[in-house]
Structure formats: C-alpha cells, structure tokens
Length: 404
Image (cartoon, rainbow, N blue to C red):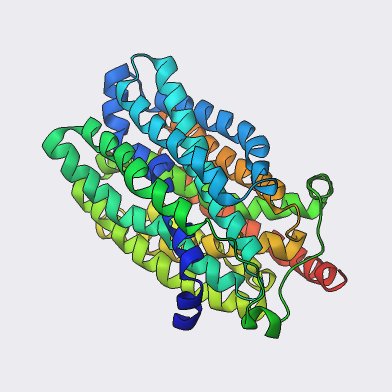
C-alpha cells in the first residue's frame, strides 16, 4: 500500500482533496447551521426539510447533464469551474436575504459540493486505475471522513467565537485559496492505467455499456435499492442532528465529538474494503455491505443513553467504509469505463435524490408525530431486505461480467 501510494501520490492526493472539500455541500456540514437558518427564516423542521429536499432534487435533476462533462474534458478542467461555484454558494448562504436565495444557495451547495466534487474524484479514479482500483478508491474516499472529523468541531469553535456566518466565509476562502490551485496542479497530469500492478492482474472491469443500455438494465435498479440506503439514512441523521440532540437530551458537543469516531472507523474499513475489492472484486462483497448499517439503524432507534450515539457512529463508520469504497469501484466492474462519466452522473443524481428524500420525508413524519427512532427501525428493515435482494442478483452480475 505504501509503495502504491508513493507511486500514485499525485492523483490520490487530488482525489482526496476533492472529497474533503466536498464537505461544504454535504448534509452534515449544512446541518450544523440548521438551527440558525430555521430561526432566521422562521421555518419548522418539516418546512426546512422540504426546502432542503427541493434544492437537492433540483441538484439531482441537473447532475446527469452536468456530470457527463467528464466524458468530454479532463477532471482538472471540470474542477476549474466546480470549485469557484461551490465557493460562491458558501457566500450566498451567508447573505441570502429571502427563502428564494436560500433555496438557490442550498441547490448550488448540493450540486457542486455533494454532487460534482465527489463525482469528479471517483470518476477520474475509476478511469485511471484498473487492478488497483479498490486501493485507489479506498485512499480517496477518506477525504469525506477527514471532513467529517475536522469540520464539525472547527465550525463549532468558529461559530462560538465569531458567529456561524464566519465559518461559511472561511470555507469560501479556503476553497479559492487552497483547494482550487492545489487540485488543478495535482490533476493537470493524466494517469494511464499501465503500471506493473495493472499489467500483472486481470482488472475487474466489464464491457463498456452506454448510459441508455444501463437505464434499460433491470439489475441496475436492484443495485440502486441497496446503494441508495446509506445516503438516505446517513443524511437523515445528520440533517436532524439538532432534533436528535433535543429529543435525547444530549450535549451538542457530545454529538459533534462522535464524528471523529465515525471518521476513524470509516477510514479503517474503507482500506480493508479496498484490499478485498482488489483481491475478490466488488461484486463478491456487495450482498454484505448493508448489514452494519442495519445494525446501526436499529441501535439509533433503540439505544437512548449518550453512549448510543457513539455506538451508532461507530457502526455507521463500518458501513460507510465499505459503502464508499464499494460504490466507487462497483460501476466499472458492472458497466465498464468508456461512458463512466455519464453513467456515474445518473448514479450520483440518484444518490443525491435519496439525500433529498431523507430530510423531506422524515421531517414531514416528525411533524406528524412519528418520531425519528421509530423511523430508524424501518430503515433497518430496508437494509436487511436490500441485502437479500443483492444476494439474489449478484451471481447473475458476476456471470455476466465473465462473458464480456
């Protein structure tokens, strides 16, 4: 792994920075300002959830078209307009004078942060690496966890001293001063998957499907049943963290301190999953990756003491570690790499759509008296049902890949 990292440090570092700085458009970071934004615009949990859902749905509708730009231009050119747009969204959420501008700010944060930053990183890594795709992905996706470990505490400290607006202004400055020049330089050199490791091992890569072929494939929609569970569930908990803290009587700092636990666990299991993928392929792991999330969801619904937060975050980290690496490596193994930008854009749009539904549906249910703990038990059942469906479909997908 150290040799692999040394040889490929340039591209791994660029992908890591993209996933790290995508944090400004991720739900966990936006949720840190949820209370202030609801107070500023006089919104209930359900109102803010519906507004957030609308912005995220707009982002999901845009991604299939914007995301395919990665099939026509290199990643550094895409990053050249994505990063400034994300910085502008950070400024807009601070100075939004009305709900329309708040909706626009949330839309831009979701589109360019959660959507395009992550999409650019994982699409480029999926193309650049073949035999080492699992290891490469497992080293890039911890950028998300680094952001989850560092930024909530940093935000709390800055907001406590200078106000929540200062944290967003600092984020915009960081994107333009640090992220933009660093990522443009690191990605300015293309990598061709022709290393010794790529030559010695047969890559887990399917024949090249077009996006139209993928959308006609029934197996694609069964895969989405499982792949969409982690973003839906994780977004729900992060978005309603203020509600959860009030409901259970937790100290807000105690909840924030659980993010590093999740981040550390995620990184560890992402690296484990990367090695397993390079050895066995993503499809062999697919039926099992939701089981930790099922246990985590059940724990969030049933365990009420404060240590339950850490148990949930630890189990969520196990699930996220497997999910983040698996989802990055799965699609080239099932659908090839020639049209990966267009295909992944649809998948990312679906994941963004799931993150939109999570806050909207659960917020509306909370307003109607169905508490989040009960909903978490429903989500545990979803994970178990999806695992069974994936176990049924995986042998067919493996057989199809072998006949490419």
